[in-house]
Length: 353
Image (cartoon, rainbow, N blue to C red; front, side, top):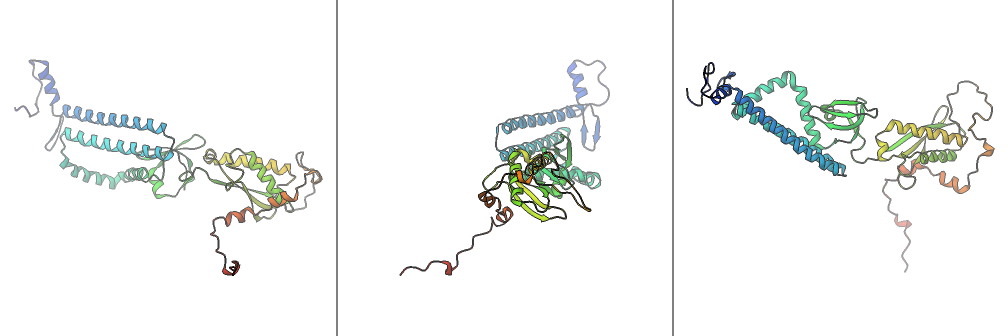
């Protein structure tokens, strides 16, 4: 028997030394697939190669995680995370290829393996492969990154915490972990609330009784917006606005339009409830009634509640206050992006001679 051929049969009854016995166990054939002979030694070497690849990936990702924690730029953190995931996959793929080489499967045999894998994909691994490719697309395209607050077509919404090889982990505001297949982010409709800008605009609908002073309604709503700490700004281009949006069966329908801070963007339910609470308090303070559907004669006595102010006791709005509050915010917002029209020749002053 040559030195390269694996030994067969039982170990020597009286081995000359321990090394000969170990060599016999190391080269003992376990499985033969054509020209490929699998031995314990080859399996150990293949396992060590996979372990080294995994350790290198872990060390590399740990270094990137330290850089990610020190960075304050959200886009830079997203790039670091994507690079870490891609390098992790590449190192594992390289480790698998080297492990197969140590086992005895040459690179030329990978074509056969790829054909078998294709058959497997056609029968049962198609969904898994689709999710894997979708995850790679998400990492390269950067349309979705860790820290984004998203809402899926299925109604699931929460913060992206991790993009794995098969699924993406989303944590809701109720601290529930939801694993969403990566293909759903690629093929479905996804609302990313923090993709371009962390601030967003919230519309809080409310109604008041017919005959209410709309300037006083606007003042009450602006006071409510100022009382909620989630309001981004109280003046400037992103100041709160009050829109009269419709005439309902029993009420004048308004909307309080506010820009939210970055922290409030990820808690839509609690933020909307906070504005509703402040609106009810402010409307009652100004003697404005939130109506209910009326189908018959309703007789009531004044005042309706302890916090409902009487009309004669309300502070009077000055002419200047009414002029400031009478501005149509919806009209101003609608025409803010329109280009200015050039002055006509007739409007221009004739040149002096």
